[in-house]
Length: 588
Image (cartoon, rainbow, N blue to C red; front, side):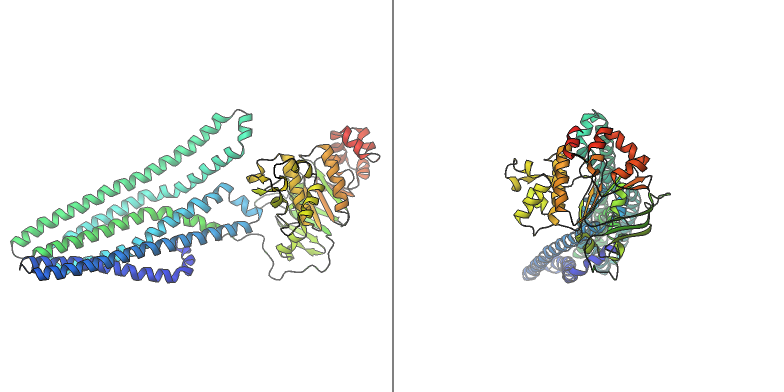
C-alpha cells in the first residue's frame, strides 16, 4: 500500500488543501461542546438571554464553516482517489503492453483483468475513506481526549476504559479478517478465470454436452467467493452494533457518574454535557478507525497485486544504445540459436542455423511440437534466444529498438486476431496512413474482397470484439490483409493459411508471390501444398533442423519431410505439382 504513495505526487497541492480542510473540520467540531457548556453554565443558569443568542449565533457560524470544510474534504478526497486509481490503471495497462510472452505466462489473463478493474476499484474506495477518516479520526480523538480531561478530569477514566475496550475489539477483528481478505482477491481471480473459459469455449462446451460440468465449476467458484464475502460482511455487521453498544454504555456511565458529581457540587451540568460530547467524538473517531482497519487488509492485498504488475520489469526491453539499420532488404539469419522456456529443463530449439533472404520464400515445417512457432517468435523478440543470435540485416535483434524492428515486420499469427471496429480499421491497424485504394488492394491480395463485398457496408461493415461475427477463414484473410497493407520488408506467416480451403490458399499464395517478390517471406505451415513452391524449406524435428532444401531435394533426402508429404498428398499429386499447381490444388 505504501508503494502507491508515489502516485500521489501529481496531487500534492490537493492533498495539502485537504489537510487544511481536515484541520478546520476538526477544529470547528471541537469548539461546539465548549460553547454548549457556556450556554448551559452561564446563559441558562444565569438566565442571560443575550449570552445565549450571541453564543448560539457563533455556534451556527462555526457549524456552517465545519459543514463547508467537510464538503471540501469529501470533494478533494474523491478527486485524489479517482486520480490515483486512474494513474494506477494507466501505469498497469502500459506495463502490461510492454510485457513479453514470458510475463504473460506468469500472470494469467483473468488475473490481469481482475487487477486492472476490481483491485484498482478496491484501492480507490479505501483511499476515499482513508483521506476522509484516517487523517481526521486520530486528530479528533486525541484532541477530544485532551479537551475532555481539561473540562472534567475526574471522569476521564471512563473514556480511557472505553478506548481500551475499542482497541481490543479492533485487534480481534483485524486478526480474524486479514486472512479472509487475502483469500478474497484470489477467489475473484478464480471466478473470472472460470467465467472467461466458459464464455470463450461456449461452443466446445455445448458440442461435448458439458454444460452441467461447467456449471458445477462455476457454482463452486461462486459459492467459495460468496461464503468468504459473507464472512467478511458478517464481521463488519457485528462491528457496528458492538460499537453502538460501547457508545451507549459510555454515555450511560458518564450520566451516572456525572449525576453523582453534580449532586456533590464537584461538576457543572454544562461541563458534563461537554464531556459527554467529547467522549462521543472519541468513540466515533475509534469507530472510524475500526472501519479503516477492517477495509485496509483487502486494499493492501489489492495494492500489492497491482504493484506486483507495475513493478515487474519486462524481460525484453530496448537496449541502452540501440543500433540503426544502415541498409534495408530484410535478410533474416539464425546463427547457432538455442532457446529454452523460462524454468524448463530442456531447450525447445537447439543449434538452429539458416538464412531467409529477400526475394525468397522460406518455409518451416515439422511435426506438432517441433518448435516451429517458437522459432518464428524469436524474430520479433516475443522471446529472446537463450544462446546464439537472430540477425535482421546483419544486426542482432537484441541490439535494435523494438519500434525499429517491428517497423520491418508484417506478422500474421496462427490465430487470427481482430479488434472491434470496422473492416477498414482492422486492415489499416498497422498502417493508419494507408489510403482506401491501398486498403482495397491489400484485401484483394488476401482474397478477402470476395466476402467483404457481400457485407452490409462493405469496408465500413462492423467487426465485433475478437472478430466474433466472421468465420475463422475470414479472420485469417483480414489478418493477412493487415500485414500486406503495412508493406513491410519481412512477412511472417505463422500457420496463417490453415483455415483456408485449398483453392483460396492457392489463389492467395499466387497473388502474394507477385506482391512480395523483393521481400523476405517466412511461412510456418502444416500443409505440404502451402509450401511446395517455397525457395527453401526448413524441416524441424524435436527442436533441431533435420534438413534444408527445396521440395524436390527434401523428397530425396529427408525422411521426416517424406513422412509428412505422403501423409497428406498422393505420390501422383506430389509429382504433378510443378506441371500444374491449380490441378494439384483441385485434386487435393
